[in-house]
Length: 504
Image (cartoon, rainbow, N blue to C red; front, side, top):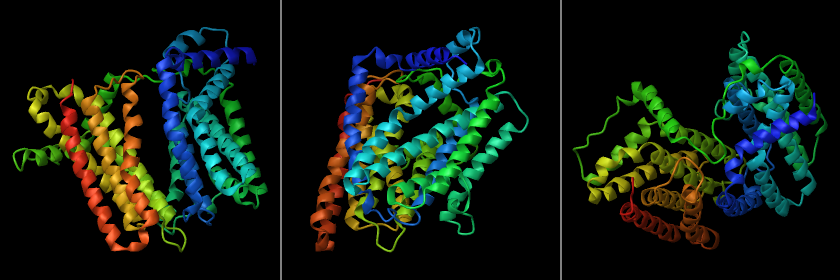
């Protein structure tokens, strides 16, 4: 194996994928601005993590193992597509080049690692800095980050090895992959079903890494978890070497058609249409009467049904499941959940509205020409969109809060204010600005630049009340409730004003 060839292939894949970034100063500036907005908040959250009940509890490795198992399961599910990130041009170029399969696979594995960790490593570093400022355990935090990155590399190698077997059509490869994914996820149900074995009772590689990270952060036995993780790494290395011996080029599939910062609107629309057709057996039984009630109520029902029928509710359900797991973790311990933990509901409230707004922009904006013919009704359309998004976000956050045994009323009001403000600002942005879906641009990152600051500013007054006046009791709660109602009314009118700037 020639490392020079590996370097050439790796460099080609990087240049092809990050081409839009290399040739656009605006994109680099926007990415830097996005990092400048989000990374400090990650540092702050990490600083307050020790205040949560899960920190330094016996159940922390269980939660870490669940997250690591989910990451490993995702790598294995990606393996169903063949296990490699291959652009169509690579099939035409590298298949005919004097290149050994193992050289290409190693370059692809390095590329996958680079793409996967391009965002993960900076996030881990900022989180580690926040945690280090609070605990002072700099050495353990650095080693824990290295352990996580090493586990991610092993997961990618395993996914590539299994994906090669699936692409080659080996008997039982796909069934074995699905069974392995189920085995990785099944112990997560121990939180809700006591008779299921938890991760701590199973010799999973994710369990070993979780206990290794806990030992590095708090002190304790790290030898046995390290040996278990090393054995997993050796097994993955052997599997990768065995699979990379065969000629993989005839089985390569084009699994990466777009470069970084690009999106295919037509492909997104086709996927949404296929998803809608697939769900139609269930969703067509749910209908809305467009003739009953005032127009704003009708449009709210219309958007709720659209979110349900176009498949967006599936992503909302996934995020709600994450909230439930976070809430279950916050229940651990005898002390009641803090407002820091309940604000995770508010943070989820920043994500759900942006996802719903982007889905609408990709699939529904081109279909809005009939409504645009009567522009005075566009305000009602977008107000209904705002209210429907608020209902979905609040229900998801409520489920997450209930699973966490709820914190103080002021914490709930703060999360509610943040969620409502995020819904109003996300809907208003896509109503006022025609966001392209085919490349990075200033407009395409506006929701990420506008929604989080607006939502945080909306929740800040209640957070201040929670910190400095929580001991005053129900009188402060009523003030917070009135404030939350004012936030809702303020953002209820914002989509109407934004609709005046609507463009197809």
